[in-house]
Amino acid sequence: MKNFHTELQEHLLYLYQLKNIVRYNSRKRLVNESVAEHSFFVALIALEICEQRQLDDATTLKCVVKALLHDMPEIEINDITYNVKEKLNLRGLLKEYEDNFYKKKCSKYADLMINNDDNEVNNIVKLADIYSVYQYVTNEIELGNRSNDIQDIYNDTLKRIEKLGGVK
Image (cartoon, rainbow, N blue to C red; front, side, top):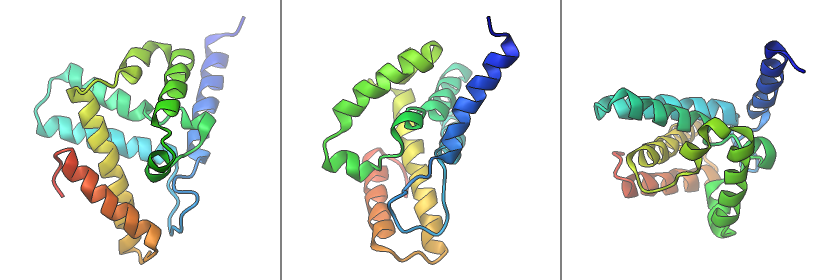
């Protein structure tokens, strides 16, 4: 029987893998961003959106937790960019995989993570996720990255922000 310390240590080492997964790994980029960094920024952005909307603590906590955990399945499937998911029509297949992942690895939060109804928590986390992409590609452009890939992601991100009702 494992003790608490051993279980926690194993869990933390498992989660630490998110730090080693580089986002946009097939794109020209000047600065690497790990999935762990991205999730952190999504959580901070979600928190800010909740504060601006003056949401209650329970809703805010759900948004922050969902933001922190939203890309955890990438420990097993790696980073698959938005445009690849769309081009290859992977949304349904990935959703099934991710749902099973959350049931097995994050059972306490599985309902929160699996529920993708069009509700306030999901919309805030989606918007925060897109703003995190915007933050990253804007930084790349400001650092001098003039690649078509980064410009395409930037343009697509602006459209996605507008579609979700965010402000550019």
